[in-house]
Length: 228
Image 1 (spheres, rainbow, N blue to C red):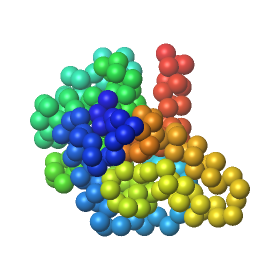
Image 2: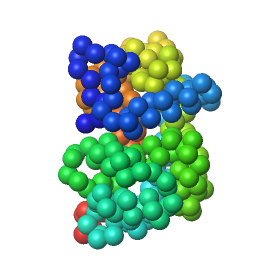
Image 3: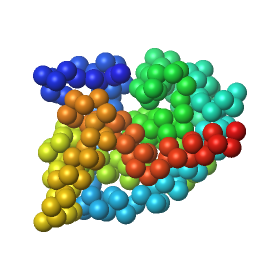
Image 4: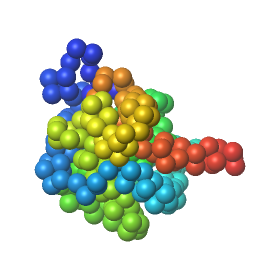
């Protein structure tokens, strides 16, 4: 997958696998210069229900672009989606986005992977067409939800290098749960849930996948399969 590091590498020394990975990191670093409104990790947790509700409303959009109704968006359907939403990404950029978000590499993007992709598009909204596309989806709260997710990552990334380290996660949890014996274990568990490639650093994509799991987005997929 893109951006996987060897154990002896640091993120800054690594070369992202795709141009997309580099663009995401650069976009996050630019956003981090603006600061964050988050005051604690607890303030992020308190937003889970509202985030969950907002993201679940994307299900109808996902089903619209899943043209063959098989429960997954394939590369061609994603290109059709970008065309309909008037997102001016190149074929290479769309392919890179698909590969980056199709984490189980089955050439089909499920609902939580689609959510992650849309949020990455939002982060890359320096291109005005990307911002316009989110608006065209007809969900005014979606942009605010994505901004909350970006804001949460900025809060965690104290040194503003575009990655969250284990120490940064521990610091964030300790700020919220100062004096609680369990705070260190909680921080490590949360970090392990985010760091799925086990390289000791978490990028924004990894954070998003963990976040969809935390708020229960994967559950809605299971419900859909049960109803088939």
